[in-house]
Length: 365
Image (cartoon, rainbow, N blue to C red; front, side, top):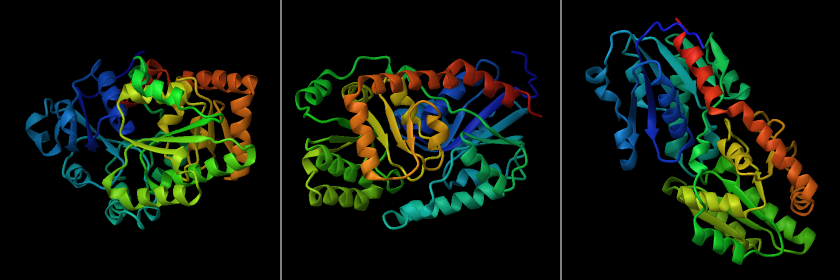
């Protein structure tokens, strides 16, 4: 691939570098791609201790910048003082927009996060005139860029680090899941416990399925149970008790990659009932792991799933329960979804994605 290179350094900025986070994984893979052509570093507002060695604090940028002909790439996902810092710089700027979850989902449970989302909206608008090129990872999210005043916008795929799954599943977790399996399906959802993810609707689905088919379904919600969403987590646990399915619902909290691999291997169907996803990387992870995908078609989810799974336009619990049963009991349906998911992943081949980013970033003046 032939590209023009108007600068010698492209440095990435993001609010927080978190282990296993979809944005963080995307940033790390993009760094690998950029490093084949230019100097590149990562700068953050905060980072988990185990991620500190992957970059530097953003206020160190002036002393660590290697070349005068540099460009900045800001991963915008929430309000951050990095946005104000970037406005003081005069280097060419790219925006990688990771979408904002509407603040109304957070307001009843986490007012601080709601305020940060509102701050992010203002910063998104404030950076528009300063930006040479902005992109999102879905057409749904790209429309936010247009509304905020960005003139040069794209939709580019997200980097998904499928290589993380090239390891054996945790033997203890896999054994436990298989030995305790009931006569019904094991439903998996992967993502942090958060109001926009609608884990409460997955719990209701478990109750509906168990009533319809007179055998218990189990739900495994794998993802961080953050302290900022303690109130929402308490609501979920109370709902499971009230519906009589507490023993069928597991909120795992943070797990290791080998444990996550075990959940993907042991479960029967991946179900998303989120009201808002700016993309939804776990949908693709499920396809990679050969797990059929069933999802509610909200926000960017239909774009992400494409032809790789079943997308239902209405959040009807009976419809979802019937779909789960069909996937669980009909091997032809199940295998068809597995094959469709793997075909969908061709659009996210890491080398193909890297080429698209290098073409856009290194040929944009």
